[in-house]
Every structure is written in structure tokens, then in C-alpha cells.
Length: 162
Image (cartoon, rainbow, N blue to C red):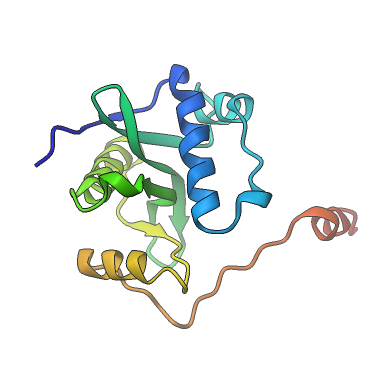
């Protein structure tokens, strides 16, 4: 096992978090959509009313990976869970079980923090390496579920409905 430290992010890590998230967005071809900033990470990722939690993987002083996550609830399961928004390991650090260790840390933190009984995430169809990784861990990748997003003008228009 490599000498990689997995720990919860602190406010001083905001710049590192943004750097890793940008690298992930670029890797996925979503770089032009990336809007997170240090300010948004600080505002939403720390404090009493935070909306986002982050675990970092560090090789000495160098950040080599992250997992960002938040609480969720399944009415079907009747239980709280954890949604992993982002899981990223820099290419040169892959193959060392860092992703698995990050997910394990998220699972433990969410179970202790809000009683999470399940973990869920989204994987891109075209990311065959990620799909294989998640399947090796035992994730179920259903064919009958697709994410749906409403944002921008369409969200604003919905908000105007009586």
C-alpha cells in the first residue's frame, strides 16, 4: 500500500480542491462548463451549513486525489445515503487503490456523520475505465436510469410557474 494519507479537507485546501476538480472536468471534456472557485468551495464546502464534503488523498504535500460528496435520502430504501459527486485520482497515481481508499473514507465519514446506509454516484457511459473500476467494487450500473438536469433559463422559467 502506498504511503498515501486520506483525510477530510479543511478550508485551507480550497485551492487544491478547485485544481483537482478542474483537472477532472478537463479529463471528462467538461472543462468549458467548470465554474467552481475557491470562494464557492469555501462557501459551500465548510461550516455549519455546508452542502459539500471532500476527502483528499495526499502523497506527502502533493494532492493526488479527491472525493466530493453530500448527504442524500432514498424514499425507496427509507434511508439516508451519500452521493459521491466527484472521484478523481491524478493519472500518475492511479493503480494504487487510492480511489478505493477515498470511497472507503467517504463511506465511513457519511455513516458516522448522518447514518448513510448506501453510496451512490454517476458514471459516464464513455468512461470504460471508471465503469470497470466501479463494477470491480460491486457497484450496480443500471441501464434503466438516466440523470436529468434542469438549469439556466429552463430552471428560471419553472420557478416562475404559479
